[in-house]
Length: 323
Image 1 (spheres, helix red, strand yellow):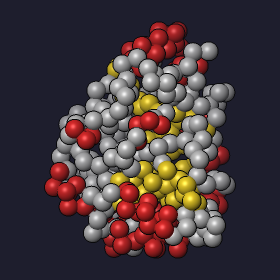
Image 2 (image 1 turned 45 degrees about the vertical axis):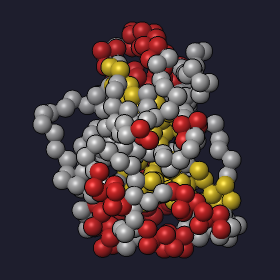
Image 3 (image 1 turned 90 degrees about the horizontal axis):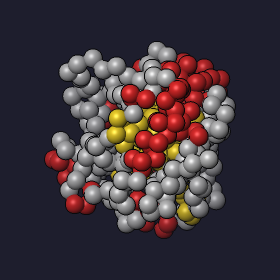
């Protein structure tokens, strides 16, 4: 079986699949003015997703993360989950969500074959949550988190974009919360994009700051598994929950790169921070094109660069909030 290995020896067993770019939140670090599209986009169909994942699975993909936008806005979302879960060699199906419809759907998604779930909760204070997301539904989202635990998910991950002057004061609240909860709390370092320079300069805080705080408090870094994501994960003997840190500006961040991304309209992105993409959609309508599709993916990977260029000011158009 062919495997996806780039020129630097990195193996790609993890695919991040966007199924929509629509979102119903107005997060100040991502879509402060809300979602708008100048034209109607035709997102990947269930059949196209099936053909895409059949090809990737034969190239060694073992884990798929469904993202958006907000993926649950798709009316056929449960069907998409089951379609991916029924591909024999896919070992894990995950999603990232803003939690808007989580409380009523967690069990249905789990039953459809979803193995893991990440929920964006950018503050444990209801007022700050509203300030950041533009949605006054903090309790509803937290009920959704509990619904995930009740549904049977072995571990629920919580994403929080760390921002100076907004939610950095919530650190101790988060640590207290996961003391008795089977939750991995992941702090994501704020990333600069092409249109948020002022916001970035005001609110960016280095992930190294919280890393030093954790190590000084007795937290211990875990060894990463083969198809784990980019988070540095820490455990503490008195806590059931874990802490994950995602720091794209840290040294050697790209050394452990193990995932590719396909957009909601079928473009392959070799770097999560890169805007350039390789169109795959013309080969997704029919399963008869699977071998050509695999060849295109393999050939594209030969052009993957060793690192992102964030430090050189190349910001791209694909922030990582949905990791």
